[in-house]
Image (cartoon, rainbow, N blue to C red; front, side):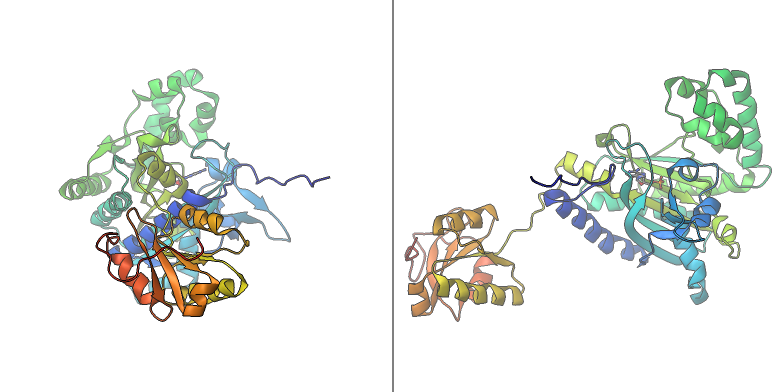
Length: 443
Ligand code: AMP
């Protein structure tokens, strides 16, 4: 009896075929994009002390309250990282990255883990690309970060990203604490009308009442005080400069007072990129300023700003726009007949790869016809055809598989140069083709 197949953990994904190629393309685009803004890549652990997230993300957040994968193999409590900023700042402090002086710009990518209810665009293991700029309070840096994210989506061919922007102020008593109090006062008379989650958040994290998705809570939230209208003078000035700098760089945005983001560490600027192709989970990414986090994690007071984009969401947007036909074509597929020709073909294919050209061949002992079909299926530009006759003459037949392509015998000494030259030239015209042009001996 066949063994029972084992299935993937709920909320995790396998990336295969086009989705794997798109995945790689997004990472390659990131590796080209972020260093242009002065960011250096870092690789960080997936496993961190639980305490890191409790302190950084905040005990009264959805993530820490109910979404973390936490376990205690020994005395210590460990957590699979639910987000990247906390670990990046831990590394910044532990590796003393500030010692060179000045602003430190880091980017990273990798899987994150949250025990959320899986749905389209929401997974339990998902991937983020994140950036953190640590060491400057300049509002122009907020604007640079936000625009950098927009340009990243553009570089991938994703059009139609919408930018939402807000400021949630700072811990100064005249700023966020006063706003929080005003919000509580405004919510209090209608508290019984809010959903159970909001009633629960009222005491612990009243700002989150603003981004509740329930229609009734949304209706009630329309009349609540707006944080960007109640900022202290310093935060108001900061927000104004961010908006001016964004406008100056051509970024279109909506100020959205319901944007508070689910993590405690944000101060002042918060932003989110949305895309209509994504459905209910419409955020491609987001971020904000977090001026208190470095100190919270044991460092000197150090202002910082960052963003994270979700790779799965980017893939959805790419697939929706069909922005990528991304299977890289194979330059050559080796087709051979007979054992010595098969071994000879292996040498030809190996030499092509060593010359930097992609090549593959049949390893299943198939008929000539099905080897040719495989060459077409693999979208090879050329089939290399080798039989015992060609081998004895020291030649290989090169068949151009592009529309209107011809085939010809080429000396084994010349086939790499021939392929490399033909690859960049249009297919030869069969009537005007020079030299020997005959069908493959054994086709
Ligand atoms: P956050 O760290 O919550 O600000 O998330 C930043 C971005 O990561 C979001 O805008 C999404 O694109 C992505 N993201 C967050 N949570 C998930 C999830 N559970 N599944 C897939 N993508 C997610």
